[in-house]
Amino acid sequence: MRTYLATLHQRPPAHKKRFALLTSGIFTLLIFSIWALATFGVTNEATPASANTAVTQPNPFGSLFRGFAVSFQSLIGNMGELKESLEVVNYEAQNSAGSTNTLNTYGQ
Figure 1 (cartoon, rainbow, N blue to C red):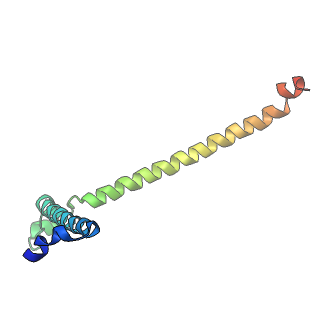
Figure 2 (figure 1 turned 60 degrees about the vertical axis):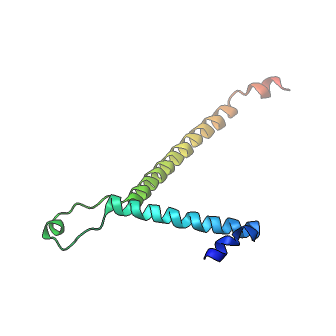
Figure 3 (figure 1 turned 90 degrees about the horizontal axis):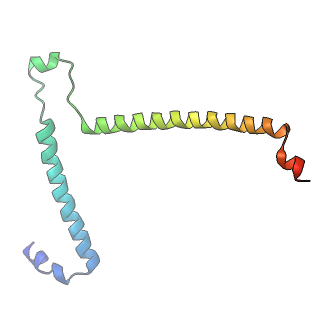
């Protein structure tokens, strides 16, 4: 490993970038693992008190996915309302075009 690190400066830039990405990924994974263990810990399911309770531990990914689901449902609802309002506007435009159209009257 020492010879690899000693000769790293002689390698091409793409190799150096790959090494930097790998190293930063390992450190990020290490920090995330420590954070996840510190925040959520290891559950001990052998205790009868925790087996009787129906309380679940908070899950960051579950919360993230629930937030995406709510946002998606809201987006679908807004698209439906937009479609309905555009149909009403289109209907009103078709009905007013058949009556007295100023451009048709004075444009000839």
